[in-house]
Structure formats: C-alpha cells, structure tokens
Image (cartoon, rainbow, N blue to C red; front, side, top):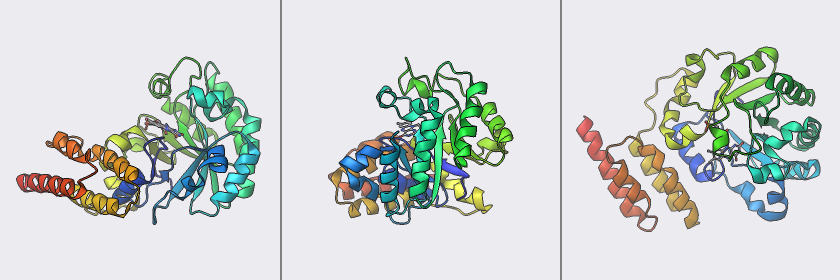
Length: 322
Ligand SMILES: Cc1cc2nc3c(=O)[nH]c(=O)nc-3n(C[C@H](O)[C@H](O)[C@H](O)COP(=O)(O)O)c2cc1C
C-alpha cells in the first residue's frame, strides 16, 4: 500500500460520510476510521465495523485498547471486513484514554505494546501499523523514542505514523495536546535515517500536499493530515495527480456537491445525513457565499431544496468567474 497521503483518524469526524467525501476527491489517499476501542466492538456495537462504503479502500481500521486477548478477538472479526490495515492508537493523550491505560499512555509500556501488536498480527491477515507520538511528558525523546521504536520493530511492525510532538498526559487537554507541545519534524526525519527499513509517515500541523518537498523531508514515506483535511478537504483534489504524475482536471466543487447529495439519498439513517452535511462545510471555505451555503447545509429536512439552492449558487459563481 502506497502511503503518500493519509487523512488522520479523527473521532467525530472521519466517519463513513466524511470518508465518502474525501474519496470523491482522491482514490489513492489512505483513509482511517475513527479510533474504536476493542471492547466497544466486542461488547457494544459490532455494526461499527460495517460502517464503510463500497470502493472505500485503501482504508485503515484504527483500534484502541491494551488487552491482547480482546485485540486478538477483534482482529479476527476485522478479517471478515474489507480493511487493508489495522492501526493501533499509541498517541491519544485524552485523560479518559490515559486512565484506561491505552493511547499515548501505552508508549510507556513497550512490552505490553508488543504483546498487543503480536496479538493483532497473529489474527489479522493484512498489514498492522502504529500511530505514535515522539514520547510522553518529561521523557527525554532521544533516550526513549529509539528504544521504543526498536522494541516495536522487533515485533515485526514496519509502518509508523508519527505525530511529531510529545503527548503531555498530565495537565493538558486533548486540544492543547495538539497545539502546545512543539512540533519537531527534524526528529522524525532522524528516526527514518536511523531506521531506513521502516515506513515513516509524518503527522502534525501539515497543511499542504507538498509538505515533504517544502521542508526537505523527502526521506519520509508520506504525510498524514488531520485538521486541515477536515477544514479544507479540497486540498486532496490534487492528491492522485501528484501520486501518478498526471494532470487530470479532477472533480469540481459543483460535482462533489451533487455527488454528496445523491449519496445522502441512499442513506437510511438521518443522523448520518446530518453528519454528512456538517462534513461538507469545509468544502466551501473561502467561497464568497460560504455563510449562505452553510446555513443551507444545516437543514437536513428539505434536502432537495438545499441541494438545488447550493448548486445554483455554485453555478452563478462559475459563470461570474468565466
Ligand atoms: C477532533 C479530533 C479527533 C481526533 N481523534 C483521533 C483518533 O481517533 N485517533 C488518533 O490517533 N488521533 C486522533 N486525533 C489526532 C489526529 O489524528 C492528528 O494526529 C492530530 O490532529 C495532528 O494532526 P493535524 O495537525 O494534521 O491535525 C484527533 C484529532 C482531532 C482534531
């Protein structure tokens, strides 16, 4: 699987409706599910695993958890679905997650991480990867990161998505943990230099597909974009062209809007439609009529009316630009 571009897993955002939108823009970008805890699948909503669209691959299932037996069980079940990879979340700094002993807190327990990863590997037929931070709290990055990565590498994991900052597990909220610990792209570059056999995908604060070239980080294997993907999904319009060195015109905003509304008609669950409408907001970032369009997107009852109105606004702006 080529990991040039990935959309980062985001709870409350990278559900199947948002992934549908990104897939309209790019067929090659790797998509992630939101993190799902192994127990939520085993003892809760098994249907969660079914929530993806046809032709959505490449898609990665992100799991949270720290119990090798539960992770093994879920990995067996995951084989019944069409996921290309399972990713273990070792980067989430939320207090609830840390209290449960999974996410970034697991970076302090490399042995247990290996047990978890072995359990997944032994039971899942395809690739297994991790999403990590550079370290946690006061741990010295140079001392702990290499040891951690070497340990994970020793259990035959080759794909690392690296959020290029530490997680501060005490005192910072998840939002602050995405902003306050400084980004350290150079450290990720060094990680790849020290472990050339690993696939290292960098994450954190990236806003452009040209990020690796712009920052002299071409030795890395790909980029993962989170918040910018959500607030400005159109950046992925050029992804396939860049991967395949092509110059296709790509899908227009008008066509995406049409396709999204056609897709909503196929959804039975109105809460999925509502979520899909909200996910469309970022498409209109910077559009002169963005405010008007967002109001129209907040109405999930008169879908046909909203669709027609938005399309006529877009048509008008296309004509004005011509
Ligand atoms: C709303 C939100 C939810 C997130 N949920 C997850 C998650 O479920 N799993 C995960 O590994 N990271 C999660 N993250 C972190 C992102 O995957 C990513 O590592 C982080 O936002 C930094 O990348 P960015 O600067 O491109 O946004 C979340 C981030 C946001 C903003």
